[in-house]
Length: 257
Image 1: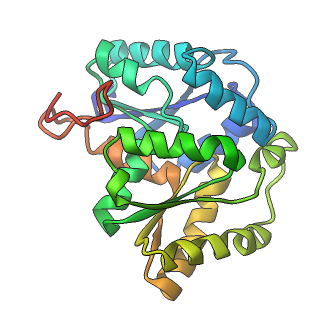
Image 2 (image 1 turned 90 degrees about the vertical axis):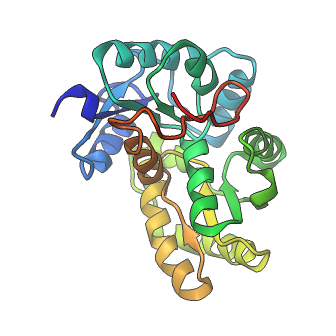
Image 3 (image 1 turned 90 degrees about the horizontal axis):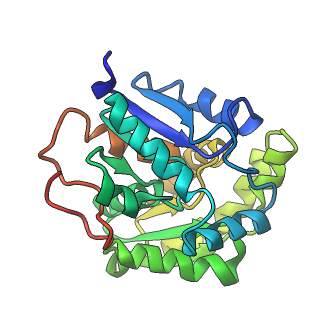
C-alpha cells in the first residue's frame, strides 16, 4: 500500500506514552491508517479536565499545540499521504492547514458533526470539558461549520477521563455507562437522532460503541465513536479530488480540492 492510499492519524500525545500506545492499539482495526505523534515533545498531555480546558483556551489564542499540528500536516503532504486526521475534537490547525496545504486534513469535531447530520438529521453533542467554558466553545465551533440548525443540544457529562489516562488505567465502563445514559436519554427526548462525543480518547470511542447499542435499542438513536468517525470520513478523501473538501478557514465546506 503506497502513501497515497493511507490516512495519517496525528496524535498530540508523546510517542511511546500510555495514551499514544492505547490509541495505536485502537487504530489497529484500520489497516490503511498510520498513527504519528505531531512532535517528539508536543508538550504535556492533559492529566485532568482542567488542563484540557486550558488547551482549548490556548487554541483560541492561536498558541500551544497548533504549530505542531500544522508542521505535521505539511510533513504528511510532503510524504505523499492521501489524507490526515486530527486526534482531537478541537480540530487543531484545521483552518490554517486548509490555507497552506492541499492534503485533506479532517478534524474529529467536523467529521462527527457531519456524520451525525448525515445519519440522523438532528444531533446532540456530549462533552466533558467544564460546562461553563467548553459549552459555548462547542456551540461556536458547530455554528462555524454550518451545523447550528441541526444541533438539538449540548449536554455536559461530569467525567474526567484524563485522570484515568494519567493513572494509566482503564475506566470502569459500567460506571461510565450509568453516567452517560441519562444524558443520552435527555438528548433523545429533545429530538436528537444522533449523538457525538467531544473527546478523542480511545476509551470514549470504546464507550460510544456500548452507548450506541443501548441507544439504538431504547431510543432509535445513534452514538458515534469519535475515532472511528474521523477515520471513516478521512478515508473518503483517499484517491479522490472530486469529493467535498474539509472546511476552509471560514468553517464552510468547499466544493472541491
